[in-house]
Amino acid sequence: MKEENIDFSVSKNVFYNPDMTFCRSMSSLAVGAIGKKLDVCDSFCASGIRGLRYAAENKNVKSVTFIDIEKAAAKLAEKNAKKSKIKYKVVEGNISRLAFEIAADFLEVDPFGSPAPYLYDAFRFFNPKKTAYLSVTATDVAVLCGGKTKACIKNYHSRPLNNEFTHETGLRIMVKKIAETAAEFNMGIKPLASFSDRHYLKTILEVKRGAELAYESMKSLGYIEFCPSCGYREAVKFPKGKCSCGKKTDYAGPLWLGEIDNVKFIEKMEKLNEKRNYLHKREITKFLGLMKGETGMPPYYYNVHLLSKRKGKGYVPKMDEIIEKIRKKGYKVSRTHFSPVSIKTDAPYKVILRS
Ligand SMILES: C[S@@+](CC[C@H](N)C(=O)[O-])C[C@H]1O[C@@H](n2cnc3c(N)ncnc32)[C@H](O)[C@@H]1O
Ligand SMILES: [Zn+2]
Image (cartoon, rainbow, N blue to C red; front, side, top):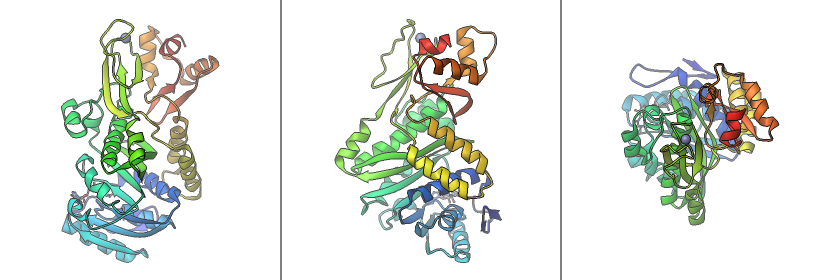
């Protein structure tokens, strides 16, 4: 098998999904953008393709520790790492046990489904560290993004919303859970790059030790209040329960209301992407550009089809038309990587409806 420049073996008993190549490329760019020397731990490694790529593509990776609970995966990762030139160690075992024994600067958490049960383990890898980096994937999108409210409350202690901007609230619920866990370890979080793609949600964060930093992170938590009747939405500390249209509101949260991307960091990823010949180079350029444009914007977006319906318009205006109209009124507007038919803007809802 070949992924980017890595020749590696797969086996029918060990998980490998070529559809995650885009995610691995984005993550590898993030590893490079960190710049500092890193001891990486690929803690749900399967074939080891993530760790192999991170080390082969980035000069700042000093070593990789591969972990998998399955014997077949650990054996395969060993075989694949042996062929490479990287400094590595493969450990067969449960990360919940090994977290006490292994230290990492950059930890990859890429389990099947929800990362929630592994977040306490993740922070144990950072025990001796003042600063570290955590990369988390969630494939339980149905839970985080609306459909399964009870499961989301149970696993993430937050209420999701199954509406037009559900993918952003889902991602922000995941980031909230990470911030809460970090805080219990006296660490604050700074999301560097976060995105929703295909069937997963991904965030890569810097975590720093300090009680004050942990408390600061907690201040970024809140709710998104949403009126299913008129479509009004707002980021709030606590939901009020009633909309100005007179109807009852719904809400998502608690969730992370702070930035989910860091502009300087994304720019570093963009520069690295320019130098690499990834299969998804163009898609990545587009994605990173959109993510950058979304910083400083409210933590939700508007689907233009639903906006037209709410305005009672029989046709859907072109995206550029709406964007231009709102911009002319003096507000910020951007497209969003979450949805090709949606916009983000800081304009008041009344203004958006009139545009
Ligand atoms: C989604 S796959 C990882 C895919 C891989 N990172 C990639 O990019 O191809 C999840 C892997 O985690 C392993 N795993 C599941 N629970 C684990 C645990 N508690 N500790 C360590 N590994 C675990 C599984 O055996 C499986 O190989
Ligand atoms: Zn309303």
